[in-house]
Image (cartoon, rainbow, N blue to C red; front, side, top):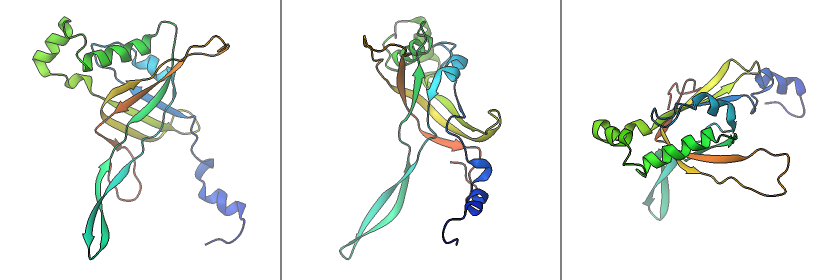
Amino acid sequence: MASGFDATAFRSKLKFGGARPNLYRVVISFPSDVASVDETFTFLCRSASLPGMMVGQVQVPYFGRMIKYAGDRIYEDWSVRVINDEDFSVRNAFEAWQNRLAMLDFGTPAIENAAVVGGHEFLYVDIEVTQLAKDGHSDLKKYYLKKAWPVMIGPIELAYDANDQIEEFDVTFAYDYFTTDKISGMGSSS
């Protein structure tokens, strides 16, 4: 173990200068009957995150003390921030998606047919979040959020003094679990 300041040792441990948070790509394949804004969303996704994870605890009382065991993995909701364009294409797609999930437009033929044929499974999609290398093209690591759907579409703040700004809004997704293409250590992918 190194003692004191050693820049050379630090540089040798930080591979290629470290991963950069501004080099990422998020791909969502919107449900087929909602809209065709997949590529537009990828460009307008202003910020995202690599998903976090947590393992719950099972506590068992034993002789006046709580013994803790690893429980089930918990996947918390995941959010993105989206730039709004003047035709509202991405926001409209998210609103239509939520309308279908809540069956607010059940009277439309596409929804009635989907409900008869296979239920609403087509409304749950996989999201791909990729950390890119400094060249902006090579993938360092991919996360696949399975069976995701928009839980919340955030408001767009309006104000007279909001000059020289572009509108943005947040979208929060629930999903069942995620997998990755590379995981160090155990060799598992979820």
